Length: 111
Image (cartoon, rainbow, N blue to C red):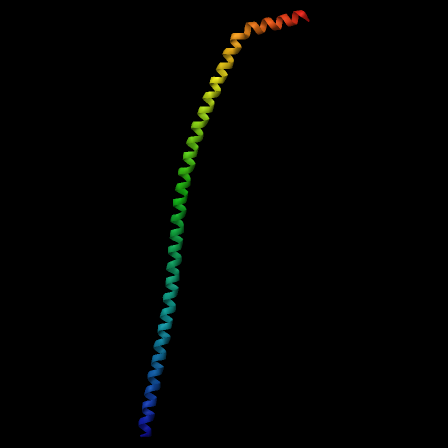
C-alpha cells in the first residue's frame, strides 16, 4: 500500500508541476499580450495625435485665411476712404488756392 500511496503522491506532484508549468506559460503569454497591447495603444495614440495635428493645422489655416481676407478688405476700405479724404482736401486746396496766394502776397507786401 505504501508503494501505491507513494505512486499517487508522485502522480499528484507531477500534476502539480505540470499545472505550475502551464501557469508559468500562461503568465508569459499574458505578459506578451500586455506588451503587444501597450505597443498597439501607443501606435494608435501616435496616429490619433497626428490626425489631431493635421485637423488643427487645417482649421488654423482656415482661420488665418479668413482673417487675412477680412484684413485685406478692411485695408482696401481704409485706403479708399483715405483717397476720398485726400481728394476732398485737394479740391479744398484748389478751390482756395487763389485766396491763399492773395493772402500771402498781401502779408509779404505789408511786411
